Length: 299
Image (cartoon, rainbow, N blue to C red; front, top):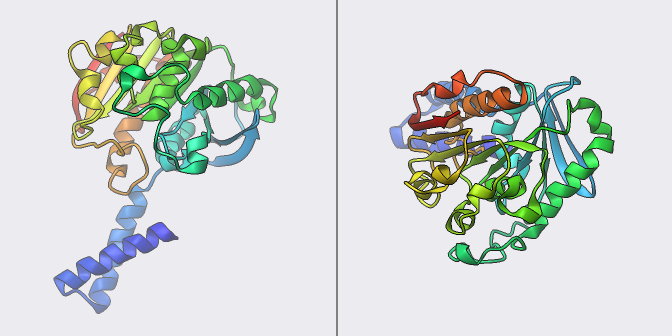
């Protein structure tokens, strides 16, 4: 209930500033609460916390059907639950989303092994625990109780936010020692891409399809992601990019100011995975939604 209490405090501050009280405040509170509730993140019908391959994971799925697999990697110092809205929308669209809890989720550590400011010094051993988590989960899933809900293991998706985007790019082949050949479609959400870009490793990715999302207020990531000669340019087709107007680096997480972006972000993510994990059409990825300032694609 902490989040609701936070909302109530905000409403009281607004009411105090405007002189609203009594029944006026009650009506104001109810109307705004309904608005916030309607904007809250989608919730997959089934969310399970379990252990796969010695790694604590969260698994989201719409029901007891059989779905394509997307493995999700969270941002540095975050946890899978911080991006429940995006993951749950994907699960409800017919995917099983498996999200490892990396060590930095358990410790809250936001400092990588090599400083953020030294991307040229990152190697395949930098925060290698993330590679190990992804490999352990992917190795163990086929023999786990959850394999009955997974359509197949030869062509899967990887989706990650921030350091999680870097992790997905790594296991898609940007670091050869991280490579998982079954990763076909990668969705990198405001990814920490600079080590791979400055070391010219983006072109080493072996997956067939890549989608990048950024934001106009995401000043530490997006400019180099989309600049001439940047990570998007270095990525082999098929590739897609969306930059969301006024979205900052945390826009993919579940902060209440971020939820306004999630429907459109999820539209592209679902369209992308539908095209490449469900043999769907790529035409939806050519549609420029209202919150998108820059749209790129090359099938």
